[in-house]
Length: 79
Picture 1 (cartoon, rainbow, N blue to C red):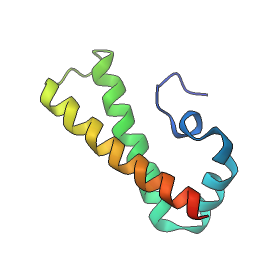
Picture 2 (cartoon, rainbow, N blue to C red):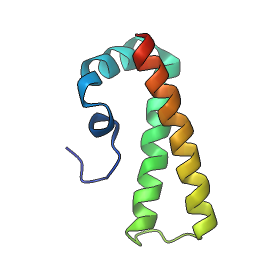
Picture 3 (cartoon, rainbow, N blue to C red):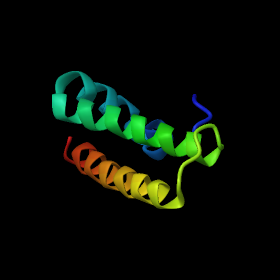
Picture 4 (cartoon, rainbow, N blue to C red):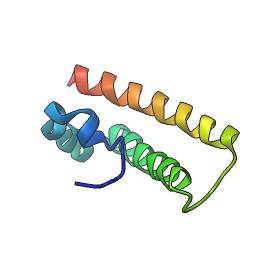
């Protein structure tokens, strides 16, 4: 498991199998999953000062992560 906080496997531990199935069968879910992972990584790098950024940019990325997570949660619930 990654040391990056907010990984989807940690956010939805009961839905790991669903996530895998949706990633392989649903292109939209796969895109959301990859985008979430990318945004989450950017946030983590900023928080650890690996790639510093402005607070405003971090806030925007956190909002984007929240929107992605909400859509992923809806898709997992519907599956």
